[in-house]
Image (cartoon, rainbow, N blue to C red; front, side, top):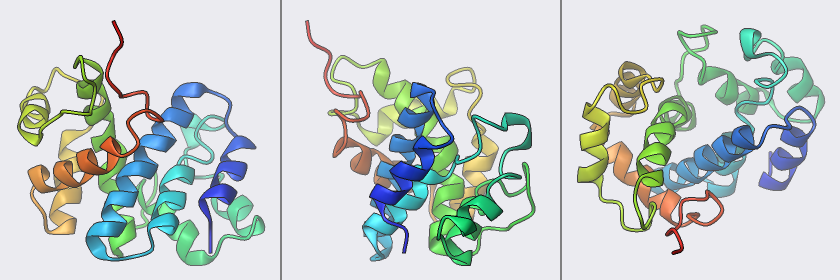
Length: 188
């Protein structure tokens, strides 16, 4: 089973850009929240979340097309690779999210971008963020405009949850990692 330590080793072999590592950490934290929500293996969810953009820096135009074989060769099993591939469903591949893990990753990949952007605008970062303030940003299509809200809504439907519920799980989980995510209170 993929561990978080191994996920970090593997991502470091293909990725150098700091913002991509930060995105990996945001998704990792949110996935930990979903593992708790579903009562499943937290480290495993976090490891999959951390590694989900394995080939993105090297192949941004062919994202997820250079993922399966290298990760299988690195020791991941078919289910783990499938979970990673499923986050590109309908965008760059046709691997439909079916498991709790796959649906969560599909949804939080985009959602964490809006949460991160909203938290960065706050003096206390994510530490005191409420879901209600996030929802205002979510409804503002100009805010974090590159984050696909329709995809997020589709993912929430797959999970059987409202956007507000999914955001609450993510924000709560990301608060636990506020410093690592560079979303703590600003000094000064």
